[in-house]
Image 1 (cartoon, rainbow, N blue to C red):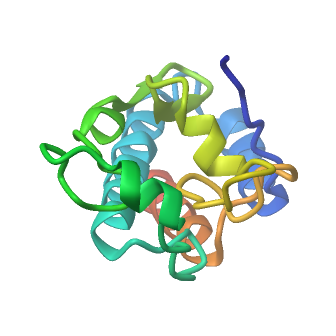
Image 2: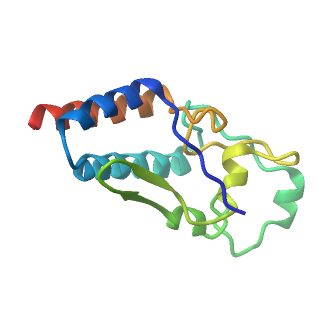
Length: 148
């Protein structure tokens, strides 16, 4: 199963639209945003917190009992596959970042049997960034704009 979250963060979208009017190819700034978001998401594995800084829910007893002995012993990091699949792709008008592992969507949204342990957005249904992620993206855009 694959899923897509469409960013609907109005301040970022408005700024990108204004910037797009001034520049033909935004690939460099989109790549910078992708790199920054990869770093921020990767750091969430270390802090075990969602984009808003809220700690991830601990494992259920059933997960703890069935956890493989050769696993890494950390939330969302059984063998490191999901984190290793984190990537981004930038083009002249957008950047897409996320995981290549299909099960990542269950962590981002949560399920009936598993709490959400967000990594990408503050609200996956709305497609909004956390305040910190939004500020980081806007900082990159402002720096890029000031250099052009």
